[in-house]
Length: 228
Image 1 (cartoon, rainbow, N blue to C red):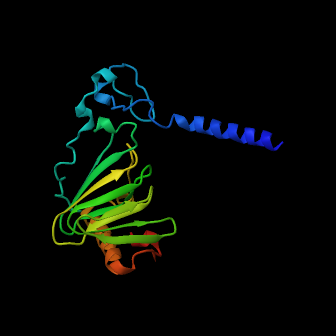
Image 2: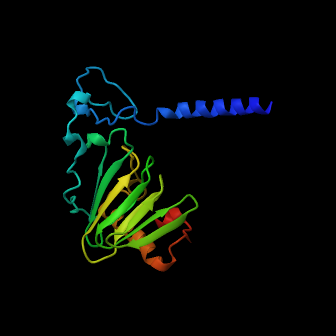
Image 3: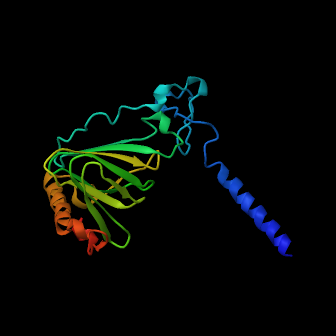
């Protein structure tokens, strides 16, 4: 009976492994056949993007210059975020990766938002910035980052950043989804007028100022809805 149970357990384990096998690529790579290059007259809906014909794949599919230039920060938040997915960068297709660049002027702010399908790793290329996220227990995890520092935002967590230095800030990010998605609560909670935007900015800044950098490991954040 013992050997029979072992055989059954082994069979179930192997079956489970087979079920997971197709999660990985079945070829070396799969640059996306972007919508602008579709030749099929019928609309097709799939979870991702179809692969290019291997005969048409070139080295250009694996290079992008989307993050080379700073974004337009001439707005009331004094910030810009550019997310690059497989739709813009074909080489990302099926690799489970996305890229982003965030630029902040002095006093610039990226409002609280979340990526429902991805965690995010941020690398500070220039400047000093406060970055934080809020977990499901309404606790804030926040740090002041300087050039060369890296910070992780867990998947789906509401997060924000604010330029707390005296120079321009540039942040590069890697997300573990080729289409991470974006949920921005600022419009729903504060509206889109300049007065509402200033109110939102003041509240996020006040959160930043209340938290000393040496006591940010897991400070409780009561009344989350009224603070952000």
